[in-house]
Image: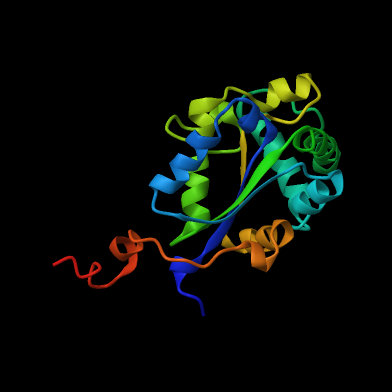
Length: 200
């Protein structure tokens, strides 16, 4: 079994993150946590790739639809439908339109608890309810409600894998093995070596 320090996760800076010149700021947030960037490319995704990405998890449609309904109900609002599959049919159509609108930056980050750390730094899916101090909480103001009124996807700057298992499938979908680089950073000694890199 691989050491937890080799856990990898996927991050995609979406078209709005690029257009708002937040690339450096977003990368800096992950980099400063101690994670290591092992793969990165700029591309314009196809609709087919975006659909494959969101439906890698066969439960995605139901889970996302239920999460959207719950978010509306928590705010005392009426969801657009009480059928989770109807909701995600619209969400997926809007996501494909949004993510194929311009270039994205796909990245793979590696390190201890990579998926969990990235998720914490990124914030919750809806910017409105994301904590200050997270990327989505600090740099954007969108909400499910406004996105639904405007018939579009929530503009939340970044996609990140939900957990390590999800990340495994997403990394394989977006990157060939030869596009990921194995190397060591000097500061990994501080993070992982049992003797703290023999400082003295």
